[in-house]
Length: 91
Image (cartoon, rainbow, N blue to C red; front, top):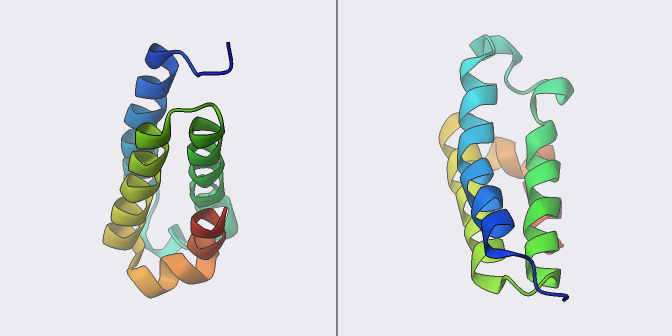
């Protein structure tokens, strides 16, 4: 079937919360805006797109909302937008 299994969608939603938190707390504050530290912005944006395409619309939008909330909280909204959040929203 085309629809993503529910367990995979729930795992995606949980990952969208945990990954930014774990990446942020594992780095020094000075390194949080480096390119190697912001990979999750694009990665979780893509994960949200996959959820939407695989007909888990609510989980896909929830993933994007969590990405916006966590990246804005840890990096600041303007910095997050400059580091790729715009692209994740546009997908």
